[in-house]
Length: 209
Image (cartoon, rainbow, N blue to C red; front, side, top):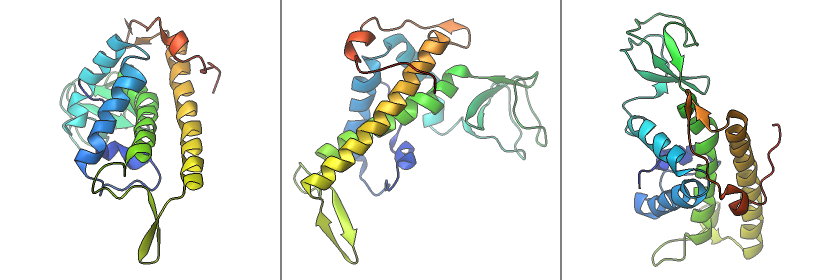
């Protein structure tokens, strides 16, 4: 399946380190995409987002807007957490992106950046912490003191998991609230919702945030 985030996106998680090897974290990235969104919210919406973020994950689009950069037609930038697409060539020195003749806001990418990606990143991180260390030659969850490290106790790990579950539930609720508020509609395209969401996510309450 096409993924919608990569290892470097876990930098939003406090105390995350990029020293974690790709082969350790990549299975959990794929798992979180499939289990926490693909089959839970909407396959059609997931597929559309996966297609839209392909160039962003490859690093060829979606960088922070820079006043000193010349942008070509259809270039994608992010400014104040909102994604914009250039409506024609835009020379350097112009005003920051806004909804006007020069820029068009991309609602689908903005939803991905503000709601979907943070939710999936934390879900991935939680799964990684639960299982990392249960394979040969992996160090597990440890805390560092001076020049050595100690295994994290069961109580400490339980507290960490509880804290992560709260974060994940909050981000999931915000994501679902956003989907409900726009009726699965982004950039004037209505995406199919998953009719099983109610039974899968019985604990989710949609509320104003």
